[in-house]
Image (cartoon, rainbow, N blue to C red):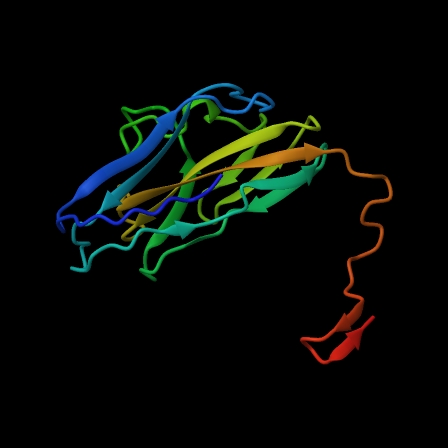
Length: 193
């Protein structure tokens, strides 16, 4: 898990797909274990309809998010765009290289990596799902895309986010009491208990 930064100088008219592809996803994946991986980003430096250079959306998450099994979970993937008027949508990354905006396999062996019945709400990038098996990882591959307005059907850019959920068995006594801060808090100059 991680991030990578590179600096390149590109002409303003550039519209390019960049990505990484390889193999060997971990063995204890719910779907796609040992399979290929692919992560793809679409950069579009052309001018937007309003004459400005587009700023791609941004997103971030922990590489692994832990949830109890057999519990309906609502997980929100954070997304933002410096172009305040853009319409942001997220969608499943897919391998349909002839139909997705990037024109290449965006997710390798982890396309559809979450359990059946998982629902993605595109407008606010909210996932609703139930993890069925403990001690397994569930891969999630999404694309965050920005549209100039709701009347546009082609995104200006497409940013990937891939991360894992890990299913565990919740203790029968877990979380019976809400978390609280106890002890000295020197940075606050007070004692909280």
